[in-house]
Each structure stands twice: as C-alpha cells, then as structure tokens.
Image (cartoon, rainbow, N blue to C red; front, side):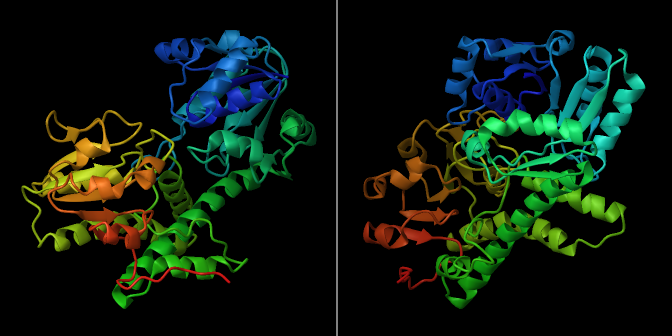
Length: 440
C-alpha cells in the first residue's frame, strides 16, 4: 500500500520505517528541512537501536522517502498517518494544535479516497475533531475516513515492540476503513483488537496510566521497606510471581519520565476533572512520582551530613531510560537542578546524550567517560540503568572518587559485590542486611 506519515518523531519515524520494512511504500513528512535532508541521507535524528540500519535499507530499496511538501506526500497515498506531538499544556490537557494542523493539511492536499490514521496519543474524542476538520476543509471531491491506531512502543525497544508487540488496536466507527488498516498490519502477524474510535483512544491512556500507577506503587512500597528494613527487590519478586500482578514495572527507582507517562497521566487526570469523574488513584500516582526524586535527593543530603554545598557529585546517566537520548521529564535533570541550587558541583556522563540545554556555561561539567566523571567526586549517583554502568569494573572504579560512596537510583548493581570492593552503597528500598532472593 502507499502510505504517508506526518511527523518523524519516535512514533512517526518508527512507524514509517517499519511499514516500509514489511513491504509498503512510505513517504514521511516533516516541516524541518534540515531534519528531512538528514533522513534522506540515511541518518536517524533520534537514537533508537536498529532504526538507522532499517532506515538505510528501505531507502536503498526505494520503499522509504522523506519530504517537507504535503502535496508530494499525498499525491499517491491511500493511507495517511498522523504521528505529531501532543505536548502537555499548562492546564495538564493535551495540546492538539499539531493534530489540528495535520488535519487541515490533509484536507487541503489529498486527491484520492483516503484513510487517515491517528497514531498520536490523543484525548478521547480527538478522532471526531480530526474528522470534522477534514470534512470542513476538504478541497477535493474525495472520501476520507478516520481511524484510531494508538501506539504502544517503549523508547529504546521501539523496533522490537513493533514486530513483537502484545497487540495492535484499531478503532473505527465504520468497518471498511478498519479492515484496510488491519490488512496494512497483517504482515506483522500480531493480535488485533478491533473497537470503536473512542474506546481505542481510551485504551492508550488507560494502559499508560495503569503502568504509571504500578511504578509509583512499588516506589512507595520501597520507601516503606527502607523504614522497616525489608528489601523491595524480594518484595517485588514475591508479589510479581502472582499472575494477577506480574513482575513487569515493579522495579523500584527514581520514578517514570519520558514523553509518555508524565504527559498521558496528566492528560487523563485533566479529562477526568473536566467530566467530574474522580481518578484519585491516577492523581496519587502523579504525586508519588513527583516526590520520588526528592526523596532520593534528601537521602543523598542526609548521608553527606545535611549539607552538600561545595561537594562534587558524579551523575551517571542523563536520558530518562537506557537505549534512548530522550531527556523529556528525565529524573536526572531534576536531580542536577536541585544539587546546583544547593551549591554543589556536578559532573555528568551519559553514553549517548552529549549535550544538555537549559544550563549556564560552566554550570556543570560534561564528561566523556565514567572514569572522568567519577574523578575526585564526593559521591556518585547512578541515575540511568545503561548496560555500560552495570558491566563496568566497579573494583577498578573505586580508585577515582574521593570516597567510594554510591547511590544506586535504579537498584541495578549488586550491593554485596560492591561492598566487598570497598564501596558504601545506598539503593532504593533495600534492606541493610541483604539476602539474595531464591525461587525453588
């Protein structure tokens, strides 16, 4: 099929590349000329494992192309995906200005009967808005149907999730366009959920909010574990073996970040308030997540005698999660801002993120290696669970800091092993007397 994708962020670019990989002819549209030229050269503007190789392969096979011109993109397309951003507004609601503009662009340029697929995460009822805009602005005498197809990709695992996902959700109020989108995805051989548009929109928000609640829950349990000298790792394993609960998203740490969970939980909470529905569970998860990094920082301050002024810290990891360069709502940024406000000196290192906006020149030191980052620091804060940090030789690293004090904000390192190397380690919700978890 001939497909156009509006927007080349994480969702749009991955969608376009994967659809070309399974045999469709895809043209991706973005208004950023430099970005489009970059992609035409086979270079991905985002870091996502496996994406650039697939992008290059499908450009060479002439199944994937890029443009800044909507007319060029739509002249052959029978399916148009909307995959633009829906940033959070000051009220907490999703800002739909890019969605609305995409709908207008479609209406003004399509020349064939078209199925418009809303891939962006949007509030319930947005597909109706898109359809109304298109019908009001439509220039050509063609039929346009709107279908909801929310994404469920994890940044850092987006290619894998597209080919090995749990399900594909297709929301259509008319059978025929839904059938066409189902046929589009048939080569992926994944379970398909067919429903109406509003239910499909709600599935996305409800899924993300549920996972956010699960993360916030285990983080609060971790905080209680610390007070009671219990170990949250053992607790998570024990409750995660219950099939009704499951182990996924029960890893205690610094809370969730990124482009989805913070924005989507706030948008769902706003939608509930707007409709006079009490979603206090989601509200509590949002509050718990915002407090989690503050609890971690206070632990650091207390361990250093209540004053971190003039102390130097190594921050290991900047991206909100490994295998991505996404800094949106990253806990590391909040931790850095707080430490700087308290008069501390901060050194940072991330395997992929090489630059931070929003800080004054000289305000922090950006290092090129773990060793450089940890050299002569008073404490090390592990913030993102990159494999490089897990696999490093911590016995050797002990010689770099002024004191071997490590705060593991992701519970990814073996405390027992590090203690043998001479480290003093503080995790999240871990007992002072540790015992390994055994399943017999």
